[in-house]
Length: 500
Image (cartoon, rainbow, N blue to C red):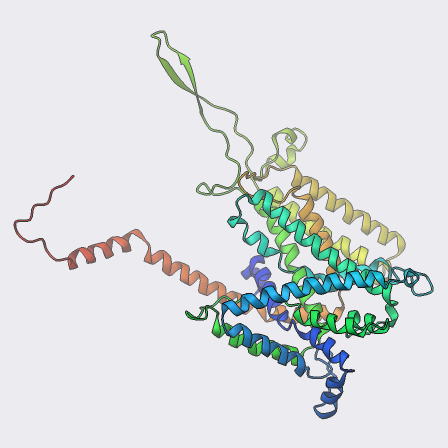
């Protein structure tokens, strides 16, 4: 039977990550929209007049052949070889950084503080709920930081390098987004911006058309990497088959699908993986490592203690030290106060507390996001549900914190577990609830077709592992050695074999 229960949370996270990579392929579409707007929407008008338009909710208003052409041109450059691809990556990254600095610098020069006044719509016209909805929609901008954690084993000091790299990267990304939105709304009031090319339109309205061309060029150069795991060509060192396949899919997505729908789908696919990852962090931190694994804390065993014998020789005597609590067990200092939990097997109380924490976080976020009007609750019912979900969330968090965790000194570990993962689960679910219902519907349909593919991939992986175990079993290896020894030529007579 195909279901997510058979595939597991890792399959869900992997499927969402691959979906995010596929949906995020048509990266030049915003740049193409900027170029079309600079040309007074001539390409859009010509296409709608001669090709037609579509009135389907999840499809684009018209086929964007300009975005498809830009994607094909970029794919042609990548096809030429890894050196050209690397050069393009560095060049586009440098152009993007220069354009961002240009936008922020010139934007603050042209800023008008009165644009944040009450007459123009104030600083936050949509309130806290609008800020959360915007953050959920733009969450796709924070993609790619998993590569830092994935490459932690290559660092000389990952315990120091990984958190520093993540903090610097997230800080730069958040800072540039905040500065860009700040100068954008200070240059022109928000209600006067064209949503198709907001940054370039702001400079055009202030009379700096030449700056609009620079912004449009930077929008074309703003790209995101694509990871293709396939065989590379020996001469060009690029995955030619993968480039041809994705070179066909990328223009197709750019032509057919609406850019706003792609962005929302990209954001919800990214947000869904975050609670799964944070839940996995809590599970692994309280899980006992295998004996062959260097993970986890090692309980102190017998210690040799010496004493002087009457003959003057030193003898050793084994003395037992009290064993420390294993990961998943209740801390020794809290056992007198939480005796009803100490009787559970290691990890059982942690598993139940984690389930309660996730459920209470979802209920608490629903109460906070929708309010008493959307839930059709009386005021006392809304307040009671809010208090109960908050108390249950905090109690489950305290139960998790009362148990022993794994400790590693040789690599980076998330600090303040389970507080930080629990807060991340609460925040990510809260952001997901601020996305539109149409986005949830599309994502649900996308998930319905996923379990069968994930189950088939899991079955193939298990079959390959069984074949590998059979091929590397001791009996098979001994049989192969005997076959090879029988095929070896016999030693000629008179040959003396000496054993050392």
